Length: 259
Image 1 (cartoon, rainbow, N blue to C red):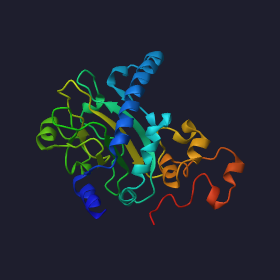
Image 2 (tube, rainbow, N blue to C red; image 1 turned 30 degrees about the horizontal axis):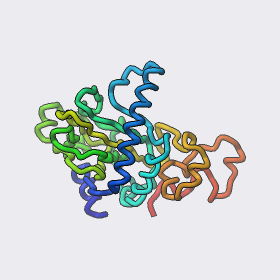
Image 3 (cartoon, one colour; image 1 turned 90 degrees about the horizontal axis):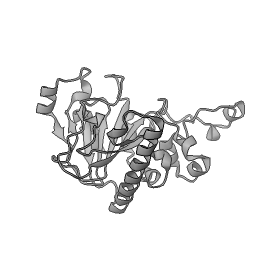
Image 4 (cartoon, one colour; image 1 turned 45 degrees about the vertical axis):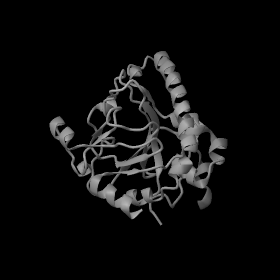
């Protein structure tokens, strides 16, 4: 745990090898390919203008193997120490960085609009579904730039950035303040990944995964997975939901600190 936390603090990122077993990765690969086709149809129906960008936002709402991946993430308890609180998922999507797609994530960017030197606010998790290589678009990461508010110019960024080269099943964790960019895929193949962000429970998530999955599916999850889904940081909608004993409250009292 200490080594990962030191790397995150110093460089802004750390690569954790072999977090996900091969059978889980294979199942995610099939599910993500199917979801991307379904999303392409949905984008067309809704007139979504960025439909060519190869993304499946909030794919966790489909459940299945995407939900199953959370059991592996919940074992990485050192992540809570970096954000100094328990964690909830802010977003969970999937991308296929193919050569023929116009992915906005290839632009130099950071994944949080707020900058603070006082404490980290969000973590990015990138689950490698395919091997990440220099040739198929491994992510560019500028070490230490999570302490830099202003975006670096392109020349400096690409001169100093390192590449997130890894194997399928590896997990890249980085501070969401870090300046980074997806690489350009020079091959004819896919470079798929799950893209997950984690925040403290008091942050507003991008999507209500508990409502999307349904109460029965959430109830079947372990306490650790419920935590990641935001099940213990929900917003009550009635007074009967508000006036509950501590162990049944929608927003539990232990969310904003690490024991």
